[in-house]
Image (cartoon, rainbow, N blue to C red; front, side):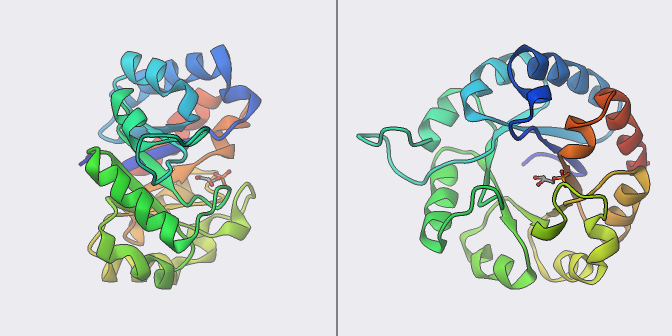
Length: 219
Ligand code: G3P
């Protein structure tokens, strides 16, 4: 299992994270993370996993995985193809890529049979509890209304973070609206094992400097 604490950066599909710009940014983030005790995880578009995972030391995961078996399934992201690309895992059920309950279970199982770590996104303790029996590797709690904004999940949902950390036996990462090292500190002090961040870094004028600033919140 990827060692906690974890700093997961979701590259999504911002212009700053696509193509050569995205890869150059990934190289710099990877370099900066090596000087810390924090595990960097990059969630990238599945089409680039192969090239990222072969050149980076940090963990590289897919932003999505389907639950189907290899075969006639045009356009599906089968877990077997991720495993063969040296991928470390996948986000599942991100709020921008929601799945049905049945699909969630199949995706977790597809990760398991391919030794991929599953990062199951939920928006409540209740939703997390529905799936803990299937043993995702990590629970990622994100308040969907705060994604991309400036109010952090730690300021807005401290009780939920505390409850998740206390009642779940699976490590919990939290995300949405994290913009400062103080947001990071708060999240960890509430019991989170790591954070998920996108826009603070992908939209920053100096993404590497922003990354280092947020990283300082882990100290
Ligand atoms: O997966 C992380 C993401 O949804 C959080 O986005 O822009 O609020 O950091 P952001």
